[in-house]
Every structure is written in C-alpha cells, then in structure tokens.
Amino acid sequence: MTPVLPGLIRPEIADLEAYTPIVPLEVLAARLGLPIERIVKLDANENPYGPAPAALAALQHTATYHIYPDPEHTALRAALAGYTGRPSEEILCGAGADELIDLVLRLIINPSDAIIDCPPTFGMYRFDARICGGQVITIPRRPDFSLDLPAIEHAAAQGAKAIFLTAPNNPTGNPLPRADLLRILALPLLVVVDEAYVEFAEPGRLPIGASDLLDHYPNLAILRTFSKWAGLAGLRVGYGLFPRWLIEQLWKIKQPYNVSVAAQAAAIASLEAVAELHQRVQAIVAERERLFAHLQTFPFLTPFPSAANFILCRVEGRDARELKLALERRGVLVRHYRTPLLDGYIRISVGAPAQTDALLATLAEVSQ
Image (cartoon, rainbow, N blue to C red; front, side):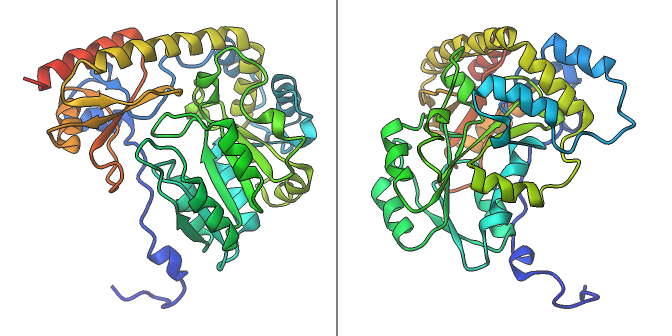
C-alpha cells in the first residue's frame, strides 16, 4: 500500500528490523495448549523466587497510585546511595536499564556518529543506536567470548563515541576482566558498563562491579537493574551511576514520570531487604553450578562457565533451534538467537531446583 505521506518515516527506521522480545508466558502457554503451571520458564533470565515479601507488601500498602510519581525519584535515589556508596546526585533511575541505554544514546549520537558493539552481547545497544540514526562498528568477540582489544582501540581511533559492555556479558556469561576495562577506559570513548547481572558475579559483596572506578574515570558510566537480583522484571526499574557532566544533561531529556509509583515503592523495599535478596542470589549461584555440572553430561551440549544467572550452551551434532523447539513443545522454555554468531547455541536461565530437575528430565527425553 502506498504511504499516505511518502518520505515521512526516517529511512533508518523504515529499514530497521524490530527487536524480538520474549513471548508472554500466557500467550505461549495458550499456543502450546499447556496450563501455565506446566511451563518451565528459563528463557529470560528472570529471578525464579520473585520479589522480596517486603516489596510485595509495599505494593499492597502504597496508597498513592492515583498521583503521579516523584519525577526525581528522591527516596529511591537516597536508598540507592546507601546501597551503592555513590552520592544520589550521581544516580538516575529509569524504567529498566533499557530506558537509560536509550537516553544515553539519544544524548550523544548524531546521525554520523558511531558506537562500538561487541557481539555476541545484549542486542539493545545496537538497536537503540540505529533508532537514533547512529552507526554501529561491530567488533566480534574472540572464540572464547573475550574482547578483541586491539580492534576496539582501532575503532576508537577512527572516532567512535561510545562503547557498551555488559559485565558479566549477556548471553555468554563471562566476566569483564578489570585489566580489559582499564585499557578501554584509557580510550577517548564514553564507556558504559551494563552491570545487569553483577550481583550474581559478586554475591553478597558491596560495593560491587566497577563503581570504585567512578572517581577516577570521568568517561565511565554504569547501568544496573532490579529485574534480576531483586525479581522486579515486571515492574521495569533500573538505575545508572553517571559522572556529573553527563547526568546533568540526562536529567534534561528523561521523561518526567518515567518510573512508576509501584516500581519506586517496590525498589525501595527491596533495598531494605538486601540481606534476604542476596541469600536468594547465593541460592541461584549454587543452582547455577549444579546445573552446569549436569549440562556437561549431555553429549550434545557444551556449556560455558558463567558468572551470571544463565548458562550459554553450544549445541553439538544437532540443530540448536530444533532443540529449543523440542523443549518448548514439552513446556520447557530456553532462548535461541537467530543471529549468525549464536545460531548454534541455546541460553538457559538458572531457575529454582525443581525447574532444573524438570529441564534435565526433558533434556534426557529429547536426547533419546
């Protein structure tokens, strides 16, 4: 059909391939003809234990849902200052870390500007950069999923403006070595370290991640989320630790009421229940090690060590997507990516012990 207004849509958007999110649980259950309680959902790195009881209570007892939320997230940023050890003036909250990725890119990217992307990694960096009309310099990771530092340095010398690094990396699970990060921080780039899974790499430790470097590197920004460790994925709440020069500009362009009353209340309550939530994180880490050991016993899977709450597996001698679909038909959901670098892999989120047992039993069934 001929557009009503030819030329209205930006060409980079018209040519953009839509991001593929996870299908909602109830939709997939209906498609498979299975009750929701039969589904073992291990495809989105969600926390199997859900929110802390204190967060659920906060949602129940909050009485201001009819009023717009605090646009400055004052109470939440104060609580985050205590958790992170960083001043609240350096903290900005978002509707998940995804919103903050978008904000940073909208702030810095002109159509002729480029970011560095190091796949396989989280797809939103590339996706949002292209939405902004920016260019993407692709520096694939090495076979062991480590960063190709000389190629990154070359791209930086060509004028790339920023690099996004997930630490631990998603979907490969490997950590970001401190020496690699320091080498990249020496480049003339904005270095955005996405620590969505950092609690699983350093369970129970505070401060965590790269936050101790913020006072020494004005080109460092850190993103985090409550989705994984705190079990709040459905409420969409994340935060960033930013240098002052950057956060002053980010405040100008964020939507005024971007984090809901419910999300702020649940996040604050979660920070008051850190000890309990970190115990759950440690349980997930222990289950990750149990799952890894069992996955090694299947001849058609090669699991990779992970510092996150998921395990990437190379599928040997059979089609990875067909394996994913075979598991799906039996109610076990894992992730498969239709990308050249990951076509032969599946990613399995770490669930509760009963979910691990169901996965292993189903893997045994489909191996026959």
